[in-house]
Length: 86
Image (cartoon, rainbow, N blue to C red; front, side, top):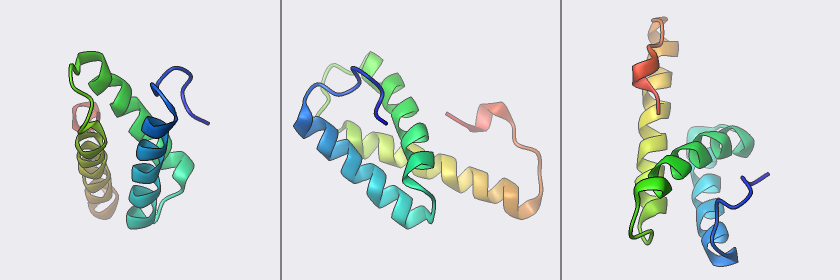
């Protein structure tokens, strides 16, 4: 379920939901898990953005970085540091 008030209109929501679906497919994760990460990062970025045209690209990149770091910690059995995550 989308965060209330996060999207300006239906077109923006569709654009971001499409990015969430692609990330979930690429990561082999559920859309719900990716949506939580994505919308958290999106909210942070939106708070500071004056132009929102490329937010889906920027947020997707940040979520991919997070997933990469998480896979590293899982793979090598190291403890995660809070500073490694968005």
